Length: 65
Image 1 (cartoon, rainbow, N blue to C red):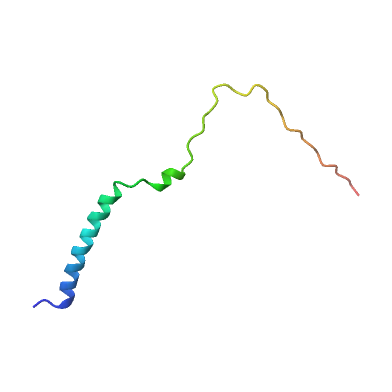
Image 2 (cartoon, rainbow, N blue to C red):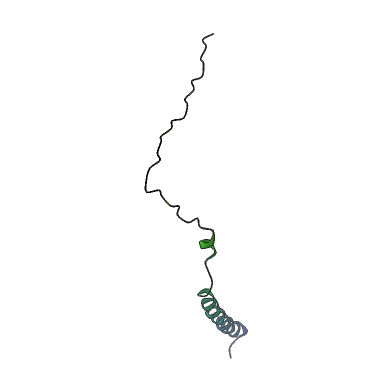
């Protein structure tokens, strides 16, 4: 005579296997949301910039007091 725990365990295993099959089926039809938010690669120019401009360099005045 099976006790209640063995019967419940077999019911739970059957229920979980049905859920796992349903999730696997749905999972193949869904889009990965991280792909929608992933930045795409930017185009790289085939020719370099025409002028190279350097930024001004300012030295702070040092005073010895």
